[in-house]
Structures are given as structure tokens and as C-alpha cells.
Image (cartoon, rainbow, N blue to C red; front, side, top):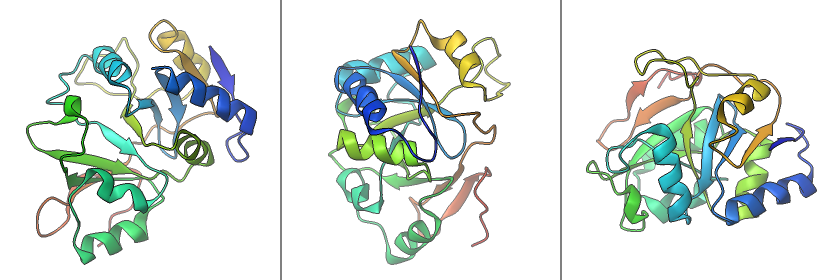
Length: 207
């Protein structure tokens, strides 16, 4: 199904409807402050397996991201970060950035990749904030692309109804939060002494 939710003032009743889908091992597509994403409850092993199947990726090699509501969730799944990294994250978030951190042992077993890292995002999106707060857990998230494209050519779909047409048989719900963007988040690797730009995206990196 497709569900229209106001991007700036998400309706609580509709947010609760999405949360019920997530709590029942559901997989959703939803808008962020960058592109539309594919997401599920990180506590749902079944839903995580479905996302990996949809993306045709090995969980041990996947670069999946945790969507959090604020920085207080960071140490739930990552090792403590330096004061420098924390200040940078606090300056950039919420916003269009993904920070790669060293994972701790609380990471779900399915997602414990060989690099022992985790991506953390705090999007500047009222819909995302309401979902994560209502679920009381981060969302596991990854980007979507047009299904008929080759792997080496990535274009991010922006029209939620076109997204629904492509993915309606693969996911349980698509949120229509208006047209999405087509530029992904900026990725910053913070696993070494100095933060390193891994991918230039929507977020401006000038540190």
C-alpha cells in the first residue's frame, strides 16, 4: 500500500499505522532529507533478511545504516567516539550525513560485517523523527534505486508513486512524503584518527 503523510506535520494516526507495519516484521520505503530509503525495525531479523534479498546483498558485506532520532543512540551500537568526532557529528546532525563508526557487540548478528563498522544517520526529517521515536528503536536503512538499472548506474527515484509501482510487490508500505531528492547523503568515515570523506553527497563537508 501507499500512504500519504505530510512531510512537515506528520499525522500521528498515520505514523502509528506505519509503526504497526514495522513491528510486524514489515519493510517500508520512506522519505528522508536526501533520497527515499528502504527500511525496517533493526530488531526484526526477518525484515532485515528481506531487505538484503531485495537489494541482493550479503549482510556480512552490506553497508547498511542505522537511522536514529538523535545522537543519544550512537553508543548503543558503536564504540565510544572521540571528542572531535562527537563535535563534528553534533554540528552536522540532524542533516544529510552518514557517519561510519566502529561497531560494538550490540550490533545485530546478521549485520556484523567483516569491517566491524556501522553507519549512523540522523536525518532532518519530521517523518523519520516521528517513526523512530514511535518505534523506540532505530530503523535499518539503505537506499533504493530504479529496479531496471544496471548495478554500475545509479539513479535514485524521486516520485513516490513511481517508487510504489516498482516496489509494491517487494515491500509492505510506501510512504508518500512528496517528491524526494536524487542526491544521497555525504559519508564520513570516522574509524581512524581523522574523519575522512568517503562519499561527497548532499551534505557540505568543509572541515
